[in-house]
Each structure stands twice: as structure tokens, then as C-alpha cells.
Length: 210
Ligand code: ATP
Image 1 (tube, rainbow, N blue to C red):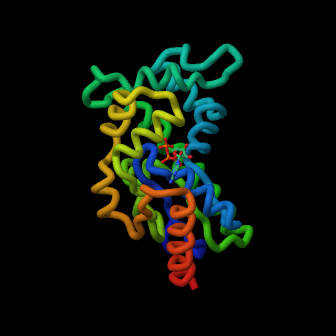
Image 2 (tube, protein in one colour):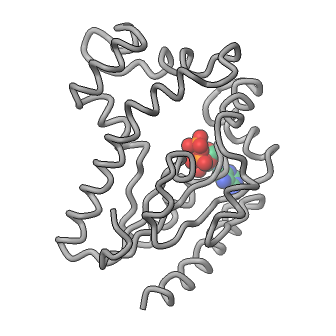
């Protein structure tokens, strides 16, 4: 990924449960090209033999089932462990997976550029954590009150409040992300309001791109 690319690359990020995927979905619904690094990470962990070997040697064979599928619950238990106060297991996981995800993302962006796409959105939870923010032409942070992030994540995932708080602790705070962002979408109201905010930001971004 490179800022001098002709394709305009826009990041969508935020905290856990802030509404990144929802915003990405609204943008995709309006006909824009949107990719998700979460999806790329799943693909990498499933299909990249080098990554699989490293993950198995680091976390044990039980993180994959007999038919080769990743067992995300098992892996989450290992990397989100309240006794691991420095998130050293999570850092190991990220060190194995992130470089491959960044390569995969770059490859997709370059191939889309070659096929004539001129604008692409990348939904990624960890743009700032993985220090890839410089590669984007602009970044939208989806911001939401902590209590809303917690409630939504519990409702969507079935995690407990403590488990959500631990995941939040592993990420850069929303305050810092908000400060670093080019655009902030506040997601503390209805889906209808969120949809309006997405239109507002898209109009500005399209003006910038012209
Ligand atoms: P994660 O970090 O877990 O991937 P995320 O930031 O991508 O989360 P979403 O998956 O978009 O967040 O949203 C979390 C949940 O909250 C989803 O079930 C979504 O439908 C719901 N949600 C998001 N925004 C709103 C809203 N404004 N009103 C009602 N529900 C919402």
C-alpha cells in the first residue's frame, strides 16, 4: 500500500463494538468497494501453511480442528487471558498474522487498482495498533460510548462484560483513535442516524477525491 497510488484508500476503524462493520456495511450498500482485514486474517489463518505451522507451534495443535478449521474460541481463550497482563500471547499472535494480513491487503488493493477501481474502503480493527495508518489516504474512526460498545458486543457475541473489557484493554483507546482520525462518526444513536452520518462523511470524502 502506498499513498502515491492512484487508488484512494480509506480506512474504517474504531474500538470493539463501536460499529465498524455496520458502517462498512452501509458504505458497501451504497455501491462502494469495501474489504475487511478481519476476513483476510481468517483466510490467512486458514490457508497460509506457514502461518498455520507457526500458530500451532506457538499455541498448540488444538487451535485447529481435525478437518483443518480454525477453532476461534480456543485461540481467544489463549490470547485473552486476564493473567497475561501484558497480552504477550496476543502480541505473539499478531506478530505471526499481521504481516501476512498486510501483504494480503496490499495485494488486493493493488489488484483492484490495476483493474481500474479508484476508491476502496478497508475495514480494520487494528489500523493504529498495527501502525499501518500512514498507508491510508484518510481514516474514519467509528466512535461510540464505552457503555454502548460493551452492550452491543455482549448482545452480538455472548461474551461477558469482563471479557469485553479485557479486549478493550488490549486495544488503543478510542480517545487516542479519535484524535488521530481524519473523520469521526459518532455511533450513539439509531441506525437511521448512523446511515445519515455515513452519507455526510461520504459526500465530503468524494469531494476530497475529485
Ligand atoms: P467488533 O469490534 O466486535 O468487530 P464492530 O465495531 O465491527 O465490532 P459492529 O459489529 O458493527 O461493531 O456492531 C456491533 C453490534 O452492534 C452489531 O450487532 C450491530 O448490528 C449493532 N449496532 C451497531 N450500531 C448500532 C446502532 N446505531 N443501533 C443499533 N445497533 C447497532
